[in-house]
Length: 237
Image (cartoon, rainbow, N blue to C red; front, side):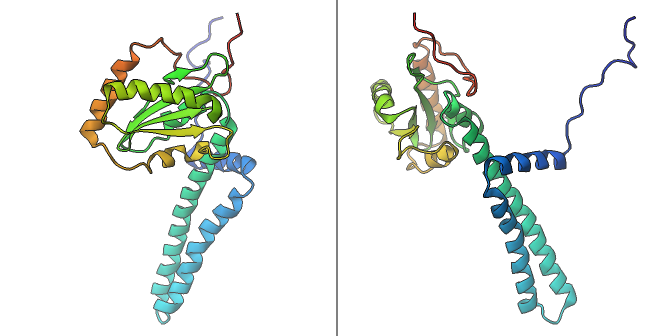
């Protein structure tokens, strides 16, 4: 018999905000053993400051003393959420670090305001799966090599030459994400990009991004959305 509307399975209900936060906390604790101590410090430090401030600034006012404690508790909750978010992001990226496409995942989800980029690399080595990604922001053009520096440096130099031919006055910077000691950790990539000296304004960023997009149309298409957990090197023919 056909199922009636009443007997049709209902879609799974999404977890509430508190349950989601608890799941994020459990994931973070699993991959970052020090996260619990940092989050505990984030909660307790503002409360302690509130108590001390209450004793010093409102010693004769019960109401004022309570307000300082409440302010400390609220500050502790806010600081806890900030620390949880950052440690959770670090834990999440640690699971895909070293995998092909990991840089694309960062560029898709964690770029700061004023930057544009694509999760699709502009160059890929078919043998090693090393890749070069491109971002445009107020620091100019940033080329990010994903893989050992000894293998990606040549790819970065070639891409810079292509860019400087059409945009000779735009700064082109390099970053490396890989196994080298001086490489940028995946969870610090977005912050590191923001440290480049400001050279472009909003209108210039838009113009440079459009010009580079037209440059990319002459390239062979590269599959979009590299899955960090499933990407594999192609079999040799």
